[in-house]
Length: 204
Length: 204
DNA sequence: AAGAAAAGTTGAACCAATTCTAAAATTGAG
DNA sequence: CTCAATTTTAGAATTGGTTCAACTTTTCTT
Figure 1 (cartoon, each protein chain N blue to C red):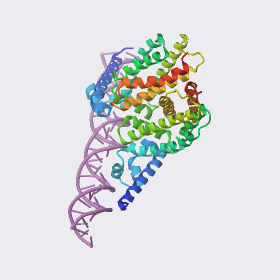
Figure 2 (tube, each protein chain N blue to C red):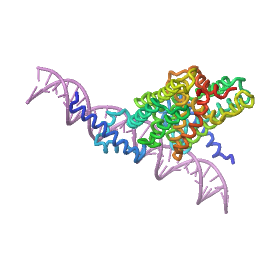
Figure 3 (cartoon, chains in turn brown, yellow, orange, green):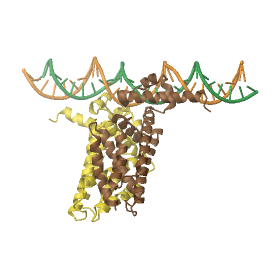
């Protein structure tokens, strides 16, 4: 099962991702030439294309790592949320946003988002859409949890609320990464303000 | 003022846009080679790059035409909206969505959106952001109009509501253009459902 | 352990967007 | 009307992502 070939493959994968992460951060997505990634990973250009369908998929692999980490951190909030609808939403969304620039620069996010709309059927495009759905589900799960706790009315359309909140947050995040000078605290404040409308409709 | 050069320039602009529109629809954005656009517009490659910074900007010019048309059609709804908050929103959003595929295919939208996030500072990137803002403002204007008509509470945060509704709609539209098999009626129904949450919070 | 099959690697060649530069066209001053 | 300045054009050269056919390495079979 775990022969030489398997180990070499895993090692090359890691080397490519490490090289790409470093170069994307240093030189930006466009600036990181495939040739340079190949050289730094000590692998040929052809090998990179054997592992990833295109340059975007390399970035995609990095984005997936990041978003999965965020989803994981979010689980704790869903399990025991603050005892106030507005704060609960703000805490969960805060985790998403505060983690977002840990590994990925704004430029990398812009590229990743662009590729996911440009090529929705590529491996990365599909993975990105799936990640968005996971985030939406997590927000819906938080709403459901708040219903259990008696903080949210039980007659509301939970899935629709989850989508509404996620879509708004995501769009705000897109605008945020599009402007280099945009700051995280302002982003969070703007989303809080918008979410107040929703909280007014669903809170008890 | 309107010498030969001016007229020739306007004419070349038109020919390039016409050729690009036709070829983008026929062959898709990637499939429409600059060389082919140049040939069909009876202009050289160099000339195209003299008029537009890059291929994306040509698409951008076409998108702007489309969105401006939609904004125009929306004004009528804002002026005299249906006498019901949910219907008013649905009517305005319906205009946006129903017009959206008149000139632009889903593939063209995908490319346009991708470019606008990828290069937010390019001429097209900035224009696209400005158009989004116009649409947000128009939704806010509708809310304000509904307040005047006594259909929406006067103590709500109008701008935040406008952003929330636009952001949600826009994100839904992005997902819509990403899936070729997605249909307009379903998109509208999903947005209506989400907007019910907001309507519950702001209606009288 | 040898040989064949399978899997993976390599890098030169390809393709299309973009840049660059010399030539052509238009304009306005005298 | 003429010509120098300015703008515009043409298309060859450059660039960088992607493909592909030949080569290597690993695994499997006996």
